[in-house]
Image (cartoon, rainbow, N blue to C red; front, side, top):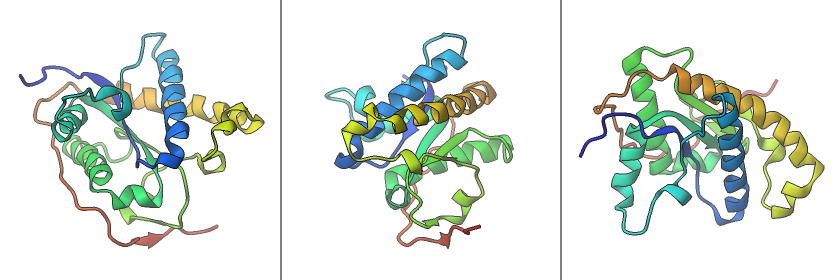
Length: 194
């Protein structure tokens, strides 16, 4: 049965890698917590594939349904993000929704950079992103460090931006576009250094 309303406030999009699983889980949980505070204490609903896909779900269909039934997209960008057809499809689906709505300046995509990598696609460089690179870690002990405390101070205003995107989302439409995109095979543009 097709959805008649949003199921999620946020679709959390990231490139899987076992070395950063703990970091991703911790970041997603903290964003969800601070987003709930930004939404007046109402629990935020976040689609996070590690928790939202159940045994027996047909995961490609589940991902498409979750994209369509989410108000906005939080994406964690790194060079390999743009080399994943799933990640690029999630991002491009929200770009198509923004284009349909005419939301060029302030849209429904709230990205953060995990790693510079020097190359992102040109269309990604047009979007302001939060810089999490200084706090990117492959070591679980990071979360007991002083840097994690500093990172928390960055995640709170990031959650404020996510809340703004949640509030900006238009009424649900069951025909939000789903774009099945090819990954970028090669980096397209080098980020300019100042």
